[in-house]
Structures are given as structure tokens and as C-alpha cells.
Length: 219
Image (cartoon, rainbow, N blue to C red; front, side):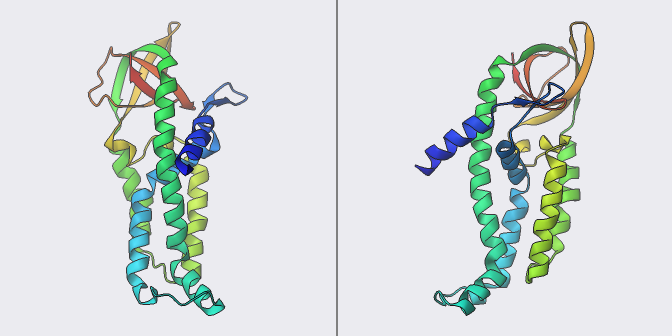
């Protein structure tokens, strides 16, 4: 029942809207799930770190104010991350499935130049993931600081090419920077494609999911 409800929500949410510049853009919930999926490895490590550091508090203390305070101070961040990770992982799968379906009606193009950008995912891990691993998550300040910083990064993420630079996406898709012709005009952008050996002169269909960001399928 829950899966069916999420399927309905994400199927509707991954439909594209157009902004004032006539650029297709993913709706907020689809963007959020892609963001969560990009940080899923970090979330798992934070959860494991907090649980292992506070395992001595993992016992039933009843529904008392003191027990709830102990739970909140030691496991609130882990609980929060577990919830959004589950929702994000389900949403990630639903969003990509729906985008891949609508991409069948994308714009047919012929690639004139292509550059592999898979190395960007390594830079993303080093810049945005690894620094968090050396933080302590034992107090309110540290936990709130993580949530605050993640909120700022999220706002940057959804309005940048980071939308496609995702370690989880890299398991199934490759990232390319391409040039192509439309009505004799040269254009460029970033795409993700399941084809890990895309070459110049390849014929593909692209579906816009952001400013110069595309989901591509073989034509």
C-alpha cells in the first residue's frame, strides 16, 4: 500500500514543469530524492557511526521524558536519516523509472562531440562526502549543524549540474558533456546515459531535466 502510494506520488512528481525561460525542470520531490540518493553512502556511514558510538543506550527505557531525551540526544539524527534514506531510495528508483519512460519521447539528436565526465563523481565524493566523516555526532550542536549544512547544500544541488553528479547514479549511468546540432545551431549540455561507451556521431534521444541537463537513451 505504501509502495503504491509512493509510486503514484513520484510518477506525478517527476513530470516536468517549465520555468519562465521555457526550461524543463524536475519537480521538488524528484529533486529531493536524487539529492538523498547522492548522499546515501554518507547517511549510512553516519547512522552506523552514531549507533556504534551510542550502543550502550540501545535498551528500552519506556515512554518517559528522561527516556525520550536520551533517545533524542543519541539517536535523533540516525532516525531522521533512516527515514529520509528509505523514502529517498524508493523515490530515486521511481523517479528514474518514470524519467526513462518519458525520455522515449525525447528530442532525437546526433552527437558531434563528447567528453566523459565520470571523474566528476570522484571529486563530488572528496568535496561533499568525505569531510562529514570526520565529524562527531554526539551532541545537539553537531547534529543540527549537519542538518543545517545539508539544507544549504541541497539548495545549491538542485540548481546546479550536481543533479547529475551522483555516486549512486554512477553505478548504472555514465556522465557525458556533449555537443550537438539542432536546426543547424550548435548546442551543448550534460547528459546521463546507460550507454557507457557512447561515441561521437551517436544517435540518441535527450530529455531535459534542468538547464542544459539531460537524460539520454539510445535512439
